[in-house]
Image (cartoon, rainbow, N blue to C red):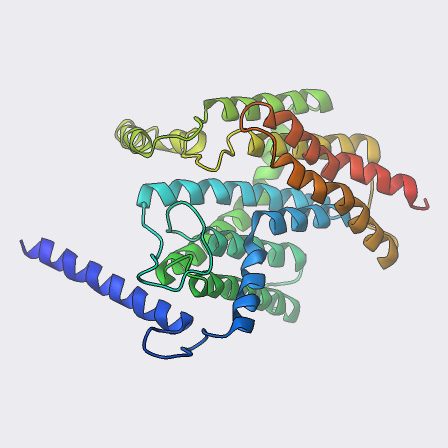
Length: 347
């Protein structure tokens, strides 16, 4: 009885704290302006800020990094974003927290799915700190360069997180959890990325085409075992069974809810991206641009194809057909566009 009462009091305090912070940021029901809210210009500002965490923005960012010749960094970022997304989708459905309702917040943004943790806060935090880590190169983290880059990463992460609360898409503790999880993912990535990269490179066959076949087969298998519109109830039963039998890590990797219909398009895009990177390393060998002019030309030429393709591919019916067509988009980013860049630029 006492334990139940304590739990009810804790949940009530959690909800009250979340609601108070949300109202303060949005502009509460009892003040006309609030701390940040109530201004149409601010509404537009926070819409722009929140777009930094959208799938499209992160796709463009990854492509630009690769096109500027920072190929390993682009691959690292792409893999980080994929694993971060899988972790986020899984946790959302395991926790199953509803988003703020119309009765609790001013709704300016209408995302689907459960609320905790915030995907924007988690992904942007993981990506921003990883980019800072990659950009500082050999400089120490406490150097002027390192401090500046990590401070910028922290600023972007906090602003995107505030935007999610301001727009009524998340509770404050959703974004706090998202930031902490993003930092954890970054920390693990920073510790194991180079070592894992070297280990995988040493273990895989040296043949380019065998590596590509392995990548495609593995991603096809992953896509084929991910059920479309997975029922959350059955998913939770599988998680419980995995926990009891000790196979939970395997289940989390291969089976998770996919209301977003990404069971085929995400593996397809990654298969094309990684296969293209392997082929580029063997046949193209493009490097960083020789001047800012060529850097701009690369971004423009790459985006001319990638952006329309991104929106057109969204119309492809959900299912196995998505795998090859999204693989083509991945190939454009890491193989075809770099080959075009090298052909057009002076040697």
